[in-house]
Image (cartoon, rainbow, N blue to C red):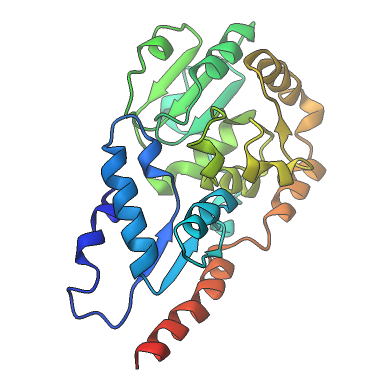
Length: 268
């Protein structure tokens, strides 16, 4: 949110140029001053010489404000998440298998009904949520098959993902998530894990390697199918990893580099 709050600084720091990197509809969160952030976004979109959006819906927002954004989706550290033979983290040792996992901040974009439906559908196993929270998680904490763990270091993430029989992107479908391009999707794929996600606009194109399910009941059924052993074969893992092989952060940097060079050349 603080990125948009920097709008009053544009043009006052002696900078050669400025770039707006827009990666969330920050004004759509429930715990922010949405009107103020919309005003900040409008100023940045009109005053920054270069604008970049991480999702198509976000690019539409910027175009409506008069900008001409480049759409550059997020990337992934392929080598980090394809690490093989990673021992499971100690805090997973006592949890009943299979483990169904989600990694990331629990905020307005996470659908509690979808998570609770998955937990209700499990005859055995544990839904593991790794990360902090910006919202009240009491409904999740109260469920006997849901385990909430604190935020863990980025260096530990591959160990968690490799321990999960299925990874979740349980996002609600609303204005906020219509502009989300989740980094975790690519991390899950780089780890080769089965994934069940809701059909957000930026995920529909991954339907060949991700199971998309809309309602909570359909989502829970999809997770039960995904944890079947036949869905986690060496070949299926290879297909998932191959799907993001050209989506590394190096590729993202290569797409943004000419924008920055053009910005600097234009200011010279």
